[in-house]
Image (cartoon, rainbow, N blue to C red):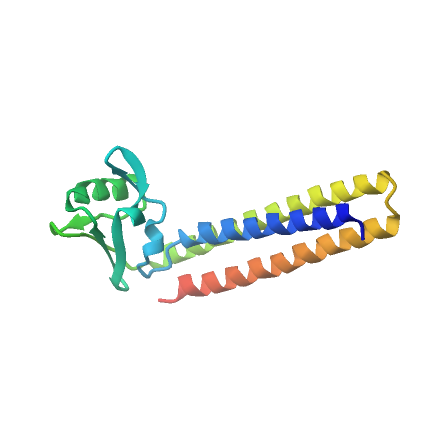
Length: 187
């Protein structure tokens, strides 16, 4: 197989891995009813004039399934942390006891669970669309090599390998959906 084909297959695989990583990041924001420090991953705090991730300004823990506890490294940052959580529009109402910020995560209603499953399905579909775009771009590059003198058999084999890669990741996307759906719907 030509080096160019190997290069395009490697690029496609890297793009698919990035697509998978983005999907996992987006799905980590979908709350499944249990409190998790991951829920606050997108929160940035004004830390002495610079926007800093919450995880770098405080210890975030979950003492139980319905509570997130945030222990700031610097107690003067409690107000800034509360403001950052509210500004992130995650639907949480933080409170503090002078030592730490506490978030009570309300249990999900059945309707909200169904909405979260729909949101998860939409994220999975976005990942599948991205994978199809990756397939299309990679196949176009491979076909260009065919026009530049690469044999038709090599072009066809390379396109089949691209399709196998896409099929492999599509199965992974489907498995992630089934797992996340079960996690969301579990009361």
